[in-house]
Image (tube, rainbow, N blue to C red; front, side):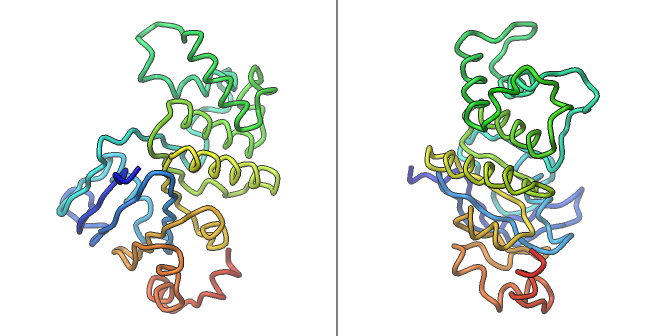
Length: 239
């Protein structure tokens, strides 16, 4: 449990040879959640893409310590008109375990059922994914990420547009997964949410402003530096 799931040392990420995010240094440990916070264009998406290997590491180091990862995009990455059921979407999370053209084993089907139970949607297992509400679809995508039992899950603005019941359910799901040792990287604009579900913060403005615990990273001076003078209370109002 003492081995970090990821470590950055003065990492700079970019597109081709052009830096987009620089000076990232810090660690994330099992069972902890890292909030990515910063204004639009600050590098939150670049950092996530860097972890996924979709953006070039131009300098410095990124060590993911043989970490298995799950990813939940900002919006559903499945055509909502496609006739796929909820349990089939979750089964997609097992794609690396399944042999080509094979069917899930009994144990794998049980894991899918358990994850749907975990996110409170076992009764929707045979429903069309596209017929679920936006909040329900988001919880299904989290179940898809969890079913492979990854060490780290990346969540891109997971609470956008959620009503209170789905928001509360997602907070519970994240908390339970953290208790089992899963680490999270969560991109969010909501400082209240960051304080509620995260332990650490990577504060960005095209570069690292802070990579530290909540109390040390979300200070008025550092927030003002990241947001170009916008105060802490103003940001809370926006959140």
